[in-house]
Image (tube, rainbow, N blue to C red; front, side, top):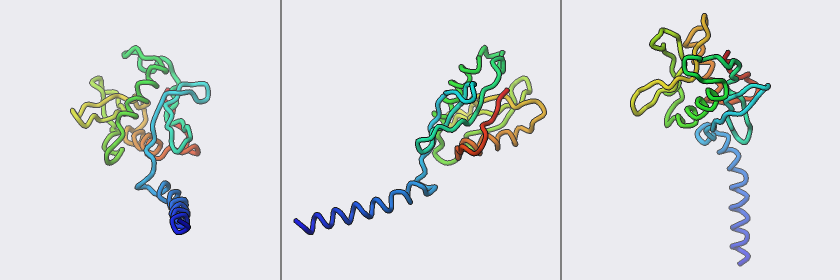
Length: 154
């Protein structure tokens, strides 16, 4: 009986020492989940990473995408859902893409692996490089961090 108790205590000690190391390694890192919340008085797509709520996209303008009839809260909710449902099996680089709308507006979207469609996340601000905008969002989505300011969508 005493041996079993010692064996259990030893096993528990090993697990207590190894679990934090495994949890912090990239292979075992928790994939963030996303929801629409608020940050700085604006709707924000927020990542939940290791128990922390980290703003990823700050939705500043209510009339951002008038053609769709979406206000900032509707966009925030839609985009948060797209990111949540787009959790990559491999890499976010294969999901978050840059392209152009039918009207020629540069956009950032999430690729749908089933049919290859592009689900609009947001329009790239005029004068900004679409690939740089994509990289900016990828940096925040792949590794949400409170020290990195969210992407601001006007």
